[in-house]
Amino acid sequence: MPGQVQPMVVSPDKRYLYVGVRPEFRVLAYRIAPDDGALTFATESALPGSPTHISTDHHGRFVFVGSYNAGNVSVTRLQDGLPVELVDVVEGLDGCHSANITPDNRTLWVPALKQDRIALFTLSDDGYLAAQEPAEVNTVEGGWSASYGVPPESTICVLRQ
Image 1 (cartoon, one colour):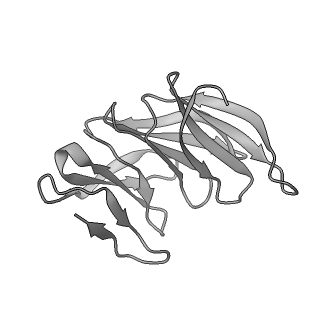
Image 2: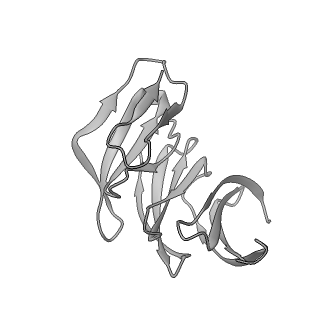
């Protein structure tokens, strides 16, 4: 793989592996052979910052990439499983740790560790992020251990500070 591999995630349909790389910030897409799991490079798409975390929505329509150093989260549209277009970038998320979609595929949770908050966005059908009301959940100052999760089929997020 070209570059330094950072985060990775498998598509919901298990047909693609998405890999964030640096120093040329981009997401690479590899086809996964169903018989033996062999990877074949398919395409790549530029990213606005060094990838720290990568995830997808539950339908395989978008890739979300959090960048700790750039303090942003980006949304890249997928077409037939391949990244084709950077749709949205939200800046001002200092220490962006990850981007996590809720089970209903509508809310993106984005922890900003250096700001002691979790930003909350609504994901539109075309991949744009809109701040929710309230726009964030404040956490204990300096209390981040970066451990949290949303259990499958749950509406509760578990935070460990």
